[in-house]
Length: 180
Image 1 (tube, rainbow, N blue to C red):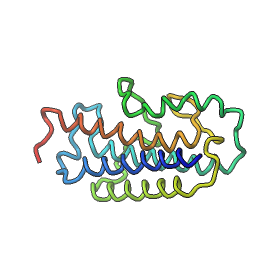
Image 2 (tube, helix red, strand yellow):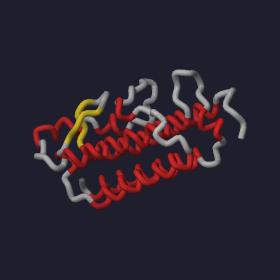
Image 3 (cartoon, one colour):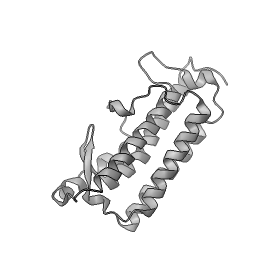
Image 4 (cartoon, rainbow, N blue to C red):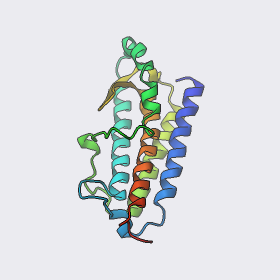
């Protein structure tokens, strides 16, 4: 990861964190748990999913960089940057969450959930700021995009946050969304 890539990943992670924290502050319990429809996630479930996915991805990155570099995949990876950078803005296609990242009520208290998000994101940002690993040479599969390099995964975490900001805004715009 070159210095520009590192800064971009850090910017994506920090700015999506700030936006997520802003949009979920001061929500009532009814607002946290409101669902547009029974099959859609609530704000709490969106936040839990973000935390669970970030935990999964950062564990995978830590594991994969312990193994051998996969230099043969580097050429293909560069073709996927646009997919990663468009993750937040291309919401027409729904993505199914990995089983490990589906909400199951891990943090029922909103304050605990927000604290966990802050903790996980701080760990991710620290890793992105400090790692000396050549993240462009290590890969693992995205559920829809196939193999992404570990740098792309860091950017995807920031984009993923923005994708869920948009989902939360949709929830908050619903006519039946509870008043504050």
